[in-house]
Length: 401
Image (cartoon, rainbow, N blue to C red):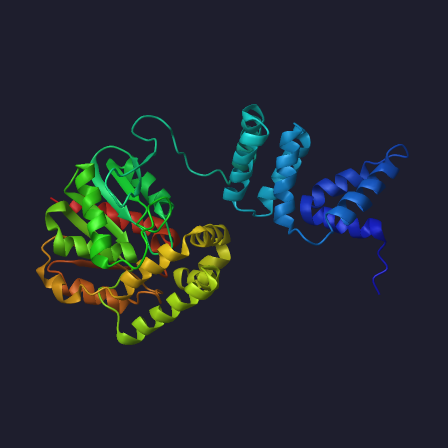
């Protein structure tokens, strides 16, 4: 029988949130003067409040960060922020809490909070890579002038590269690769495909010709062609379309984790997925999508990447997803790939159930001179094997005339 009293139950919650070291120090350091106060805090705050249902622990952690930030209680902010980082709360959620605070608590408070959090991340070995705002390195975001309007991000200087994301993702899928390529002497343009992120979401279904036309229009408006075009999954289908229909715009094409045509059973599965989204929304496919996109091992060791990718999917427009899914399901470039003269690199995932290696092999076998590379990933190799993916793109780019 559990004979713990309310104090002991509160201590358990306190340890779960703040860690043993801090709690041991706090409890062992009490005196006859402050012991009753520590008892009160432990029972009231850590059992009555932190033990309440209705909010999950992560939400409570983030609320405390916002509240201590607003009150300029920096010692307590630092304590809870360190515990939040150590608990594995995604850095995106911590960052967005501080960004929200910049509006409601004031910029000086947010500046202090970011400084404290940055030091904690550095001490914990969790500090993200640099993202300087200096000329040539800063990411500039805007929209195309032509319709349908597409959100675009630009960074770097040098040989032009365009990155096209997968269905249900957005241009942030490429954050790490874009920074890597920019640092290696490329001007990198990435964009949200129609119906995704900050781009327009036209009503009704769209075709692969329309998605390809968007990319061609984007490259022409940019005025930097011919470009190296890197597409993953749906973006890889667009890369094939450009190579078939607009080869003058391409210096080379990277077709990653993609397909040129689906068999009938796969098209039927697409129809079922579309119907499910139309009934229940994107949440109905989120878990299955993450299982297809990442291997079990990666999901276990990098849950923050998986969660960030899941949240991008869930923030999406269901109608935009469905419109593009109809284009993806009906993709049919296979018989025209023999016409392609553009140098091509085809990347397959050894564990990719969404676009099995046979699909990549079919693409590579039909494009004269195409190179086929298999990496140890599932469907989103640019996140699961970022170094191997980046190295493949850079070596291919260097090989182009």
